[in-house]
Length: 294
Image (cartoon, rainbow, N blue to C red):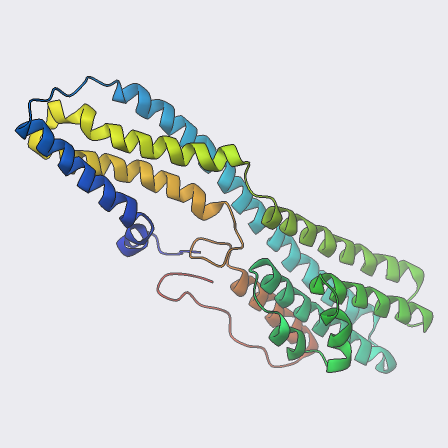
Protein backbone atom coordinates (compact mmCIF):
# COMPACT_ATOMS: atom_id res chain seq x y z
CA UNK A 1 0.00 0.00 0.00
CA UNK A 2 1.41 3.38 -1.00
CA UNK A 3 1.49 5.57 2.10
CA UNK A 4 3.03 8.71 0.59
CA UNK A 5 0.68 11.68 0.57
CA UNK A 6 1.22 12.06 -3.18
CA UNK A 7 1.89 9.02 -5.41
CA UNK A 8 5.27 9.17 -7.06
CA UNK A 9 5.37 9.84 -10.78
CA UNK A 10 7.30 6.62 -11.43
CA UNK A 11 4.47 4.58 -9.86
CA UNK A 12 1.98 6.17 -12.25
CA UNK A 13 4.20 5.92 -15.32
CA UNK A 14 5.10 2.28 -14.57
CA UNK A 15 1.46 1.28 -14.91
CA UNK A 16 0.38 3.18 -18.02
CA UNK A 17 3.50 4.00 -20.05
CA UNK A 18 2.95 1.29 -22.64
CA UNK A 19 -0.62 2.21 -23.69
CA UNK A 20 0.25 5.89 -23.30
CA UNK A 21 3.22 5.55 -25.67
CA UNK A 22 1.03 3.77 -28.23
CA UNK A 23 -1.57 6.53 -27.86
CA UNK A 24 1.03 9.25 -28.44
CA UNK A 25 2.28 7.54 -31.61
CA UNK A 26 -1.32 7.25 -32.83
CA UNK A 27 -1.92 10.93 -32.03
CA UNK A 28 1.13 11.96 -34.05
CA UNK A 29 0.03 9.78 -36.97
CA UNK A 30 -3.44 11.32 -37.02
CA UNK A 31 -2.02 14.85 -36.79
CA UNK A 32 0.44 14.25 -39.63
CA UNK A 33 -2.31 12.74 -41.80
CA UNK A 34 -4.55 15.74 -41.13
CA UNK A 35 -1.92 18.29 -42.23
CA UNK A 36 -0.30 16.45 -45.13
CA UNK A 37 -3.19 14.64 -46.75
CA UNK A 38 -6.54 15.99 -47.99
CA UNK A 39 -8.51 14.53 -45.09
CA UNK A 40 -11.34 16.06 -43.15
CA UNK A 41 -11.64 14.95 -39.56
CA UNK A 42 -15.21 14.00 -38.70
CA UNK A 43 -16.98 15.81 -35.91
CA UNK A 44 -17.29 13.46 -32.94
CA UNK A 45 -19.36 14.00 -29.77
CA UNK A 46 -16.36 13.43 -27.53
CA UNK A 47 -18.01 15.12 -24.57
CA UNK A 48 -20.89 12.64 -24.70
CA UNK A 49 -18.56 9.69 -25.18
CA UNK A 50 -16.24 10.85 -22.42
CA UNK A 51 -19.06 11.45 -19.93
CA UNK A 52 -20.53 7.99 -20.50
CA UNK A 53 -17.10 6.37 -20.20
CA UNK A 54 -16.29 8.31 -17.02
CA UNK A 55 -19.51 7.06 -15.38
CA UNK A 56 -18.71 3.51 -16.45
CA UNK A 57 -15.15 3.68 -15.11
CA UNK A 58 -16.26 5.39 -11.90
CA UNK A 59 -18.78 2.63 -11.18
CA UNK A 60 -16.10 -0.02 -11.84
CA UNK A 61 -13.56 1.71 -9.60
CA UNK A 62 -16.14 2.01 -6.83
CA UNK A 63 -16.76 -1.75 -7.00
CA UNK A 64 -13.00 -2.42 -6.93
CA UNK A 65 -12.49 -0.10 -3.96
CA UNK A 66 -15.29 -1.83 -2.05
CA UNK A 67 -13.39 -5.10 -2.48
CA UNK A 68 -10.16 -3.48 -1.28
CA UNK A 69 -11.85 -1.93 1.75
CA UNK A 70 -13.62 -5.17 2.65
CA UNK A 71 -10.24 -6.93 2.63
CA UNK A 72 -8.87 -4.28 4.99
CA UNK A 73 -11.89 -4.62 7.31
CA UNK A 74 -11.53 -8.41 7.41
CA UNK A 75 -7.86 -8.13 8.36
CA UNK A 76 -8.77 -5.59 11.02
CA UNK A 77 -11.18 -8.16 12.43
CA UNK A 78 -8.38 -10.76 12.29
CA UNK A 79 -6.08 -8.51 14.35
CA UNK A 80 -8.79 -7.96 16.97
CA UNK A 81 -9.67 -11.66 17.14
CA UNK A 82 -6.00 -12.61 17.57
CA UNK A 83 -5.66 -10.19 20.47
CA UNK A 84 -8.85 -11.56 22.01
CA UNK A 85 -7.52 -15.11 21.68
CA UNK A 86 -4.31 -14.10 23.43
CA UNK A 87 -6.21 -12.43 26.25
CA UNK A 88 -8.55 -15.36 26.85
CA UNK A 89 -5.68 -17.87 26.68
CA UNK A 90 -3.76 -15.94 29.32
CA UNK A 91 -6.84 -15.53 31.52
CA UNK A 92 -8.18 -19.09 31.24
CA UNK A 93 -4.86 -20.99 31.21
CA UNK A 94 -2.71 -19.29 33.84
CA UNK A 95 -1.71 -22.40 35.82
CA UNK A 96 1.69 -24.02 35.46
CA UNK A 97 0.36 -27.24 33.96
CA UNK A 98 -1.54 -25.29 31.28
CA UNK A 99 1.23 -22.77 30.55
CA UNK A 100 2.67 -24.83 27.70
CA UNK A 101 -0.75 -25.08 26.10
CA UNK A 102 -1.25 -21.33 26.42
CA UNK A 103 2.06 -20.78 24.66
CA UNK A 104 1.23 -23.35 21.96
CA UNK A 105 -2.12 -21.65 21.17
CA UNK A 106 -0.54 -18.22 20.74
CA UNK A 107 2.37 -19.48 18.65
CA UNK A 108 -0.09 -21.39 16.46
CA UNK A 109 -2.08 -18.20 15.94
CA UNK A 110 1.05 -16.33 14.86
CA UNK A 111 1.83 -19.14 12.44
CA UNK A 112 -1.78 -19.14 11.24
CA UNK A 113 -1.85 -15.49 10.17
CA UNK A 114 1.51 -15.72 8.41
CA UNK A 115 0.46 -18.87 6.55
CA UNK A 116 -2.84 -17.24 5.60
CA UNK A 117 -0.95 -14.24 4.24
CA UNK A 118 1.19 -16.53 2.08
CA UNK A 119 -1.86 -18.42 0.83
CA UNK A 120 -3.65 -15.23 -0.18
CA UNK A 121 -0.56 -14.00 -2.02
CA UNK A 122 -0.01 -17.42 -3.66
CA UNK A 123 3.38 -17.78 -1.96
CA UNK A 124 5.12 -20.80 -0.46
CA UNK A 125 4.10 -21.44 3.16
CA UNK A 126 6.90 -23.80 4.20
CA UNK A 127 9.05 -21.23 5.97
CA UNK A 128 6.18 -19.78 8.00
CA UNK A 129 4.86 -23.22 8.92
CA UNK A 130 8.14 -24.20 10.53
CA UNK A 131 9.17 -20.89 12.06
CA UNK A 132 7.23 -21.24 15.33
CA UNK A 133 5.96 -24.83 15.16
CA UNK A 134 7.88 -28.03 15.68
CA UNK A 135 7.95 -30.52 12.78
CA UNK A 136 5.40 -32.70 14.58
CA UNK A 137 3.01 -29.75 14.98
CA UNK A 138 3.53 -28.46 11.46
CA UNK A 139 3.14 -31.82 9.69
CA UNK A 140 -0.68 -32.18 10.02
CA UNK A 141 -1.25 -28.66 8.67
CA UNK A 142 1.31 -29.14 5.88
CA UNK A 143 -0.64 -32.19 4.66
CA UNK A 144 -3.82 -30.15 4.27
CA UNK A 145 -4.85 -28.39 1.07
CA UNK A 146 -5.85 -25.34 3.12
CA UNK A 147 -2.92 -25.17 5.51
CA UNK A 148 -4.18 -22.15 7.44
CA UNK A 149 -7.47 -23.89 8.14
CA UNK A 150 -5.54 -26.96 9.27
CA UNK A 151 -3.67 -24.86 11.84
CA UNK A 152 -6.95 -23.41 13.11
CA UNK A 153 -8.49 -26.87 13.42
CA UNK A 154 -5.49 -27.97 15.48
CA UNK A 155 -5.95 -24.99 17.78
CA UNK A 156 -9.57 -25.99 18.32
CA UNK A 157 -8.52 -29.52 19.25
CA UNK A 158 -6.04 -28.18 21.78
CA UNK A 159 -8.74 -26.06 23.37
CA UNK A 160 -10.94 -29.14 23.63
CA UNK A 161 -8.00 -31.00 25.19
CA UNK A 162 -7.78 -28.25 27.82
CA UNK A 163 -11.45 -28.78 28.62
CA UNK A 164 -10.94 -32.55 28.87
CA UNK A 165 -8.04 -32.00 31.27
CA UNK A 166 -10.19 -29.77 33.45
CA UNK A 167 -8.08 -26.67 32.85
CA UNK A 168 -11.08 -24.77 31.46
CA UNK A 169 -14.81 -25.32 31.78
CA UNK A 170 -17.34 -25.56 28.96
CA UNK A 171 -18.24 -21.86 29.17
CA UNK A 172 -14.62 -20.88 28.74
CA UNK A 173 -14.24 -23.35 25.89
CA UNK A 174 -17.31 -21.83 24.20
CA UNK A 175 -15.86 -18.33 24.58
CA UNK A 176 -12.59 -19.39 22.94
CA UNK A 177 -14.43 -21.29 20.22
CA UNK A 178 -16.41 -18.13 19.43
CA UNK A 179 -13.14 -16.35 18.76
CA UNK A 180 -12.03 -19.18 16.47
CA UNK A 181 -15.34 -18.86 14.62
CA UNK A 182 -14.67 -15.14 14.11
CA UNK A 183 -11.22 -15.98 12.77
CA UNK A 184 -12.63 -18.63 10.41
CA UNK A 185 -15.32 -16.22 9.17
CA UNK A 186 -12.68 -13.59 8.42
CA UNK A 187 -10.61 -16.14 6.52
CA UNK A 188 -13.64 -17.21 4.52
CA UNK A 189 -14.31 -13.61 3.52
CA UNK A 190 -10.71 -13.15 2.41
CA UNK A 191 -10.79 -16.33 0.34
CA UNK A 192 -14.04 -15.21 -1.27
CA UNK A 193 -12.43 -11.93 -2.34
CA UNK A 194 -9.35 -13.75 -3.61
CA UNK A 195 -11.15 -16.47 -5.55
CA UNK A 196 -14.08 -14.46 -6.96
CA UNK A 197 -12.98 -11.92 -9.58
CA UNK A 198 -15.15 -9.13 -10.88
CA UNK A 199 -17.59 -10.35 -13.55
CA UNK A 200 -16.10 -10.52 -17.03
CA UNK A 201 -18.20 -7.58 -18.21
CA UNK A 202 -16.59 -5.39 -15.54
CA UNK A 203 -13.14 -6.39 -16.75
CA UNK A 204 -13.54 -6.51 -20.55
CA UNK A 205 -15.85 -3.66 -21.51
CA UNK A 206 -14.18 -0.85 -19.53
CA UNK A 207 -10.82 -1.76 -21.08
CA UNK A 208 -12.31 -2.02 -24.57
CA UNK A 209 -14.26 1.25 -24.39
CA UNK A 210 -11.32 3.16 -22.87
CA UNK A 211 -9.00 2.08 -25.66
CA UNK A 212 -11.64 2.85 -28.28
CA UNK A 213 -12.15 6.31 -26.80
CA UNK A 214 -8.39 6.93 -26.86
CA UNK A 215 -8.34 5.99 -30.55
CA UNK A 216 -11.14 8.45 -31.32
CA UNK A 217 -9.64 11.28 -29.24
CA UNK A 218 -7.14 12.69 -31.78
CA UNK A 219 -9.64 12.39 -34.61
CA UNK A 220 -12.15 14.50 -32.70
CA UNK A 221 -9.57 17.00 -31.39
CA UNK A 222 -7.35 17.62 -34.40
CA UNK A 223 -9.70 20.22 -35.94
CA UNK A 224 -9.55 22.25 -32.72
CA UNK A 225 -6.03 21.66 -31.41
CA UNK A 226 -4.16 21.33 -34.67
CA UNK A 227 -0.45 20.73 -34.14
CA UNK A 228 -1.00 20.46 -30.37
CA UNK A 229 -3.25 17.43 -30.80
CA UNK A 230 -0.64 14.84 -29.65
CA UNK A 231 -0.16 16.69 -26.37
CA UNK A 232 -3.83 17.36 -25.66
CA UNK A 233 -4.98 13.89 -26.68
CA UNK A 234 -2.23 12.14 -24.72
CA UNK A 235 -2.98 14.12 -21.55
CA UNK A 236 -6.71 13.38 -21.85
CA UNK A 237 -5.95 9.73 -22.56
CA UNK A 238 -3.68 9.60 -19.52
CA UNK A 239 -6.59 10.55 -17.25
CA UNK A 240 -8.82 7.78 -18.58
CA UNK A 241 -6.04 5.18 -18.61
CA UNK A 242 -5.11 6.09 -15.02
CA UNK A 243 -8.71 5.68 -13.86
CA UNK A 244 -8.87 2.33 -15.66
CA UNK A 245 -5.64 1.25 -13.94
CA UNK A 246 -6.99 2.21 -10.51
CA UNK A 247 -9.69 -0.44 -10.86
CA UNK A 248 -7.12 -3.03 -11.93
CA UNK A 249 -4.90 -2.18 -8.95
CA UNK A 250 -7.65 -2.42 -6.31
CA UNK A 251 -9.70 -5.37 -7.57
CA UNK A 252 -7.42 -7.96 -5.86
CA UNK A 253 -6.42 -6.60 -2.43
CA UNK A 254 -4.14 -9.60 -1.74
CA UNK A 255 -2.03 -9.77 -4.91
CA UNK A 256 1.21 -8.64 -3.25
CA UNK A 257 1.49 -5.44 -5.31
CA UNK A 258 2.06 -1.79 -4.45
CA UNK A 259 -1.58 -0.89 -3.91
CA UNK A 260 -2.68 -3.95 -1.93
CA UNK A 261 -3.74 -4.30 1.68
CA UNK A 262 -0.45 -4.34 3.70
CA UNK A 263 -0.63 -7.95 4.87
CA UNK A 264 3.01 -8.16 5.93
CA UNK A 265 2.63 -5.16 8.24
CA UNK A 266 -0.61 -6.46 9.76
CA UNK A 267 0.63 -9.99 10.35
CA UNK A 268 3.77 -8.51 11.94
CA UNK A 269 1.48 -6.47 14.23
CA UNK A 270 -0.26 -9.67 15.34
CA UNK A 271 3.10 -11.38 15.86
CA UNK A 272 4.34 -8.50 18.03
CA UNK A 273 1.18 -8.40 20.14
CA UNK A 274 1.11 -12.13 20.80
CA UNK A 275 4.83 -12.49 21.50
CA UNK A 276 4.62 -9.60 23.95
CA UNK A 277 1.63 -11.31 25.58
CA UNK A 278 3.89 -14.33 26.12
CA UNK A 279 6.71 -12.16 27.43
CA UNK A 280 8.98 -13.10 24.51
CA UNK A 281 11.16 -10.70 22.49
CA UNK A 282 9.20 -9.26 19.58
CA UNK A 283 10.43 -7.95 16.22
CA UNK A 284 10.07 -4.34 15.13
CA UNK A 285 6.96 -3.25 13.17
CA UNK A 286 7.18 -3.21 9.41
CA UNK A 287 8.08 0.25 8.09
CA UNK A 288 7.38 1.68 4.64
CA UNK A 289 10.05 1.10 1.98
CA UNK A 290 10.26 3.87 -0.60
CA UNK A 291 6.83 5.04 0.43
CA UNK A 292 5.23 1.56 0.20
CA UNK A 293 3.98 -0.42 3.19
CA UNK A 294 3.88 -4.13 2.41
